[in-house]
Length: 240
Image (tube, rainbow, N blue to C red; front, side, top):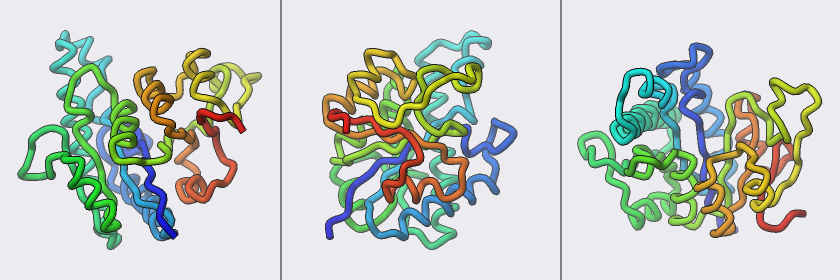
């Protein structure tokens, strides 16, 4: 049976643990174990895009008076740090892994080349994409949608840090908020639901890539999401 190709989007904050900043080794090891459990199912070829919010955030840049392009490049470098940390934890568990970077940093990561990435995936290696898109003004959400489109992934798993799906309003503020089980891409764009940024959402819509939003803080949830268990919100072009 042919394996599905999937993209997992991890927030940088998820690697920081309770502190919310920096890289917490125990947390990274736990996430690596979760990813390995999903990988060991043998059902998917896995790409991972990791954010950099635990290293550098736009709010800090504004307070420091850093120009937007420079701030974005600093954030991209942060994603490479996270990618390397995750790679080392996965390889310690015996999972063959490659880090590919959109920024040229050949001493520590392979440059992102689409055909090379496809080759790694076909050889059953987990590929972690660092450096964002390589351009300022684009988020790592957009990177996950772009890499999914380029590499033929059928779905982006949005592994959220403490949120178990998409709601009509912020569930942490409004106790009467309603969780969506299924949405269309069009509904996400029209209702301006904060699933991912609008560029990323439009990319998924135009390329017929599903999005599944779930809480990664629940042990075993990455594996459950890949198995298709009902633990989050599915977004696709044809509402079921």
